[in-house]
Every structure is written in C-alpha cells, then in structure tokens.
Image (cartoon, rainbow, N blue to C red; front, side):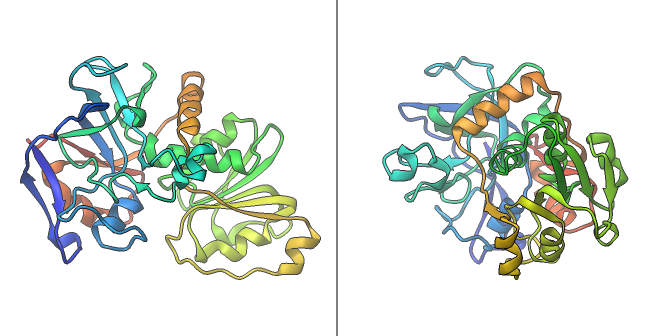
Length: 328
C-alpha cells in the first residue's frame, strides 16, 4: 500500500510517498481502508517537529483525522461499515482513563503522533477506537469529525453552551471555527463570528466582525479562542461577567497576559480544552443524526500530492484541506 512517511530531520521537505507493507491486524483490532483524511495544525506540526509529543516510530506516518470503511469483519464491525477513528492512544488504567478522560491519559498521546497514523491507504486500530458513522454524514464531513468537529463540540460543552447564551467565536472560518459556529447555533445560542470571511454567516452566525470591529460595549457569555496570542487581549475584553473563555489552540502564539482583578471581580473563567473523550465522540455522532453539520472544503489533494497540500496549507486558503487516499 501507499503511505506518507516523514524522515529525520523532520520537515515538509522530508515527507515522501512510499510503498509499505499492509498493517498487521492483531486481536481486537479493526482493519480500515482509509478514504479521506484531514490536514490540521496538529498534522502540519507533527511533520515539522513542532509538537510536544515525541514521534514514534521514525520514519513516521502522520495523520490524526481519518474516515474510511472496514476492510473485513472484525468484532462488532462488518466489512463495508463507514467509520471514523478516535485519535487517542490510551492505556485504560491510569486515573484519567478510569475517570473517563482517556484523552488525557498520562501514558498515551495522539494517534498519528505517538503512533503511526492515517496518511496511508490502510490502518489497523483497536476496536475501542473505531466508531460507526450515521448514514446522513457525507464523506467530506466524516473526514472532519475526529479533530475539527470533536474539538469544537467538547470545548462548547465545557464552556456551558446552552440556549439563550451569547457566544463570540474567533477564527470562525477555520478548521474548528466553522463547526463551533454551527454547533453553538444548533445548541440555541446567539452566535457572533470573528472572521474576514463573510460566508461564515451562512453557517449560523448572527453577525460577522473583523477582530478590530467588535463594539467595545459587546460582552459575551462564552468566548471561543482557538488561535492563541493574537486575539487573547480581545477575547478577555469581550468576556462578560461570569463568562467563560475556552481556548484550545496556539496558532498565533502560546503566551497571553490577564488582568487578575478583572478575572476574579467578574467571576470569569478561563478553560483549556483538548480533543475529546470517546463519550464526547459518541455524543457528537448522536448530535449529527439530528443536526446537519456542513463543512466548507478549500481543496482536496491526492495522497501523492501531499507536498502540494503542505505548501497550500501555508497559503491563505478558504476552508478545510482534505487528503484523499487515491493515488491516481
């Protein structure tokens, strides 16, 4: 089969498409023919060695967000089942796993980082990491669930997203932003988007602002910031009394300052969120049976075009980048 492998020294220039052996299927694993995969910041940073986890193995097959079909009957899955991979490696025995927070496993990490991932035509993963898709989910949407949609879903729930609350979402047209806007709206919130892209209004935003155009007087119950330093000050500025700021990305930097007095006198909260649990993924898939989530695709590349995809990632693209496992 074909797979993308990155070699040391890590970097885009050292990613190659090669023939590798099909994965060996161990007891309790499911063999999946990968159809499409997302290209996310975590994938780009993995390829370029800019991630906190140590890559294993090397050379390394990246790819953390995949959709495919089951290749052969296995356990509770039948050949042809459309599935997504829950992208966390976890031991099931640490305190975090036992409490249902396997995404924070102290002995694990992100599938596709601490293990080979999904930029390959086939993968073998534990059955506990495989989730069947609702019939109404498109292939493009399916390839956007494991990272982009799941991250947004958990973050909104942690922040207390509920009917009647107001939500401000920075990076609203980005990988996670487009789903945060839709989900918050579907959860009954009044959603305001921060983006240079007007199309995000069609995804459920009440109004779209550029970052420097948000009226000073506007305060929100929930502020979502997946971008990091660049809009940290603005995020806190527009956080209302007893409001929650939830963050899960450092695209523009990892440092930000706060006015401690403003934080505690208004009983404001700052929440960190990362990925999601298997329970979150199950609930998200149930949510998707009732709500028609959409995804805007900027461009889809073949696996053999990975170098072009990595270059395109650094351009001002409009929507998600997907990788098809087709090679011709």
